[in-house]
Image (cartoon, rainbow, N blue to C red):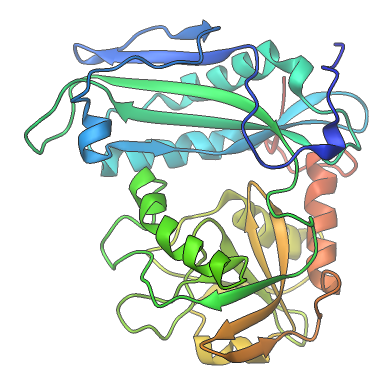
Length: 340
């Protein structure tokens, strides 16, 4: 497959229109067959439920070119499962999990020329999303829905790539107990826009959100989970019923235990103990792991021993191992890599 003539290494994390996208419609109580289309535009009524009441959710995953030239995706079954659970919480008809994975395969195959070459530092990002499309003026779920997947080649999520980030502790709450923080709903990200703009104005890369109930425990940022490393090399990630179950985080915890022989623990992490960790990172599909060098709590700085120049040693091993699995340099656990 001949690749597009693009400066792959110069890509940022932005939208580039590719050739094909997948569309399926839910009407009269059932999903249609779905298929690929050239049309990147969506036509809907002015009163569509998604526009009035934000009845929408999304996923994010990537396609890669491996070292031996194959095109693969990483654990799309988990994205299918997470979107299924999100849809149930938002009173939307879940898109069938097997059809989700098939749609991923179809759209990557159709856009294979857009999958960046191995070693370029870029990947093909996939954005599956589901939304209520028929007119709704009273507050209630829609009756008709559309499921779509588009693709876009992307570079690093954070400018500067793996350079350690500086975060600030946010005065805003990301999600309430018993709310929607554990699902990938569009509304969660809408409420994070003002805090992230304010953080950027103040010179920070992201916010650290604390739990809304007590403001004593670490939750996540606006778009990524936290991962910490203790001074005796234990990998720790926050446990909460109001943070997103990150596929990347789950994969990293497995890698820590099974590939690197490290102790790995998911537990409540109190903000008071953050100063005692040796390393900190943000993990998610877009960035894999972005190291954190400093967290600022209303003027008080927490500086990690790993510093502001490069990833800490354990974070680097986790990053190298997981990306090695994704890119075909290391043998993957069964079912993790889906070849297109």
